[in-house]
Length: 103
Image (cartoon, rainbow, N blue to C red; front, side, top):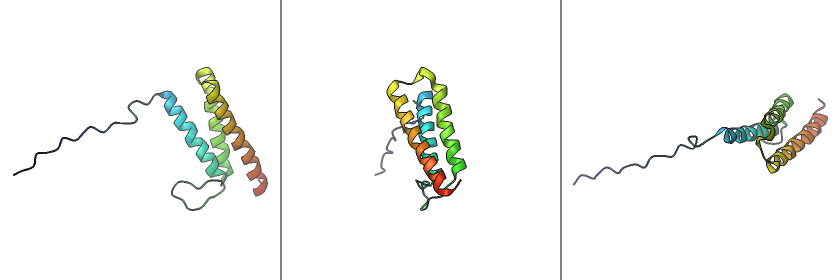
């Protein structure tokens, strides 16, 4: 007897329900990660070693600042506080790494 084909369930598209605030959050997360990678404090995904690239880190931090500034009152106080804390952590570490590398 021939087997009946099994109907496949449609796969949900995670991007279908994404709005601009989801994209903003995702973008901030990517720039934060890129800042840590640029400071040599985190390896790039799939890489076994770290490399300091302060130019890259500086741009990533600036992008988080720019995005956050553009949001204005569109985000709540808790989100703003969380992003501000991330920015502070990145800035402090950037200065520390800059001083260590002599740049």
